[in-house]
Image (cartoon, rainbow over all chains, first blue to last red; front, side, top):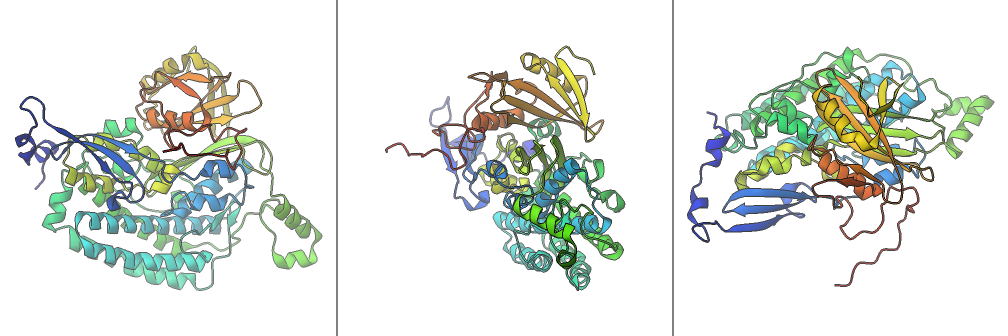
Length: 411
Length: 145
């Protein structure tokens, strides 16, 4: 049973029953956040209410602004990778990847297939990680507490895999300019294989809990409508667009890091509400699992770093016997490498949408300017339009369906 | 693509860049959106070329879904009060992007519906991403309460 947007908002007549004066209903301004648990971070929304209906919503952002773009200009090119982790802390590897790709485009270095495939595999893990956190907390907001425990159970396994690869659970900094930070550890195939064989059945579990749950259906279907034209005009990207019937995924449209060698589908739903966004993300998890399985089975052999001695740190053993390696090591560690002058814009499909880095180099060993076009910033701009005219109780579901990260918004 | 506001076209790293006349940016953007199908404005940013003059480059990243193409439009603005027309009338998403550029660089956007700071506190002084702004900031005192 599907409700249309109009009859959903037309319910609850109590709003009309309590006007201050017969001619003009009383309006109330309500501050939601910045410490409200369902704003997922420090977002303040100023709501103007008429009864329980939202007339106007205005997001107030910037509470988590840490000046990362300014800090980029103080680090050398390779050091700045660690800053990218801290932008969107739920999908760090997507940020690592887009920055590395942008700088590699400027440097014009070729990344060996093994490194590319490992990058794809790990960014898909970070998509799973992000979608799991989204599903758990979104369901918790709406009132399904069990989902939170189920999702964090699987997320823990993913964090263990990240730790195995990079030594860090969250701030991985594993994708570096020129390849990877470390060689993939011994025995990673077993750990990844064990997880990925079990994962599809876990997604079945989530669907079993939610798909026929009457409360979940009533709270998601027909809620949070925003037209596709408005979304494109307001800068919304990612699963929100695919939930409105637009088949656009940067992994397919502008393939990077050998995504064109993987076989996967782009899930598209058409009902354009919280439910369709949930369906899109759940199917994306299944597709990510497929990509990881393909990467596991077809992982090429070979080097895991580019053949670019002026960028990539040399092998420790070679440094003991070859003078060039020692010189390169000294140059890279003391000064960093220089990147030819120029400007590039590189974008990838992060779990939240289009993340694009505009990188400008003036030919020195530090970035001249790095601008991050983050999906959460673009998506949040559409929030007032989505919240207008809906009930305040539905605003929680609508907010959650956007899946923003405030670190990503405020940078 | 032909428009009187276009000054120069460049191609590097497989990306197209056009340099445009800042006085006619709204006209150009309207043309790019309506006739060239650049339906999405992916972002607006700026680069401070201090001490060069005109000092700022305002950069628009456009994206056409139909043709799967991206385009970068650049304008140079400068002077004591760098100003350019707002493109919020063309793409509504320009609203926050322009506020961010104003906040970080102090470039003013004429005819913007709500040009206030977005990331920094409203009473902040200075524009942090300018090259002459120290990385540790100026000593900042909160107004007495």
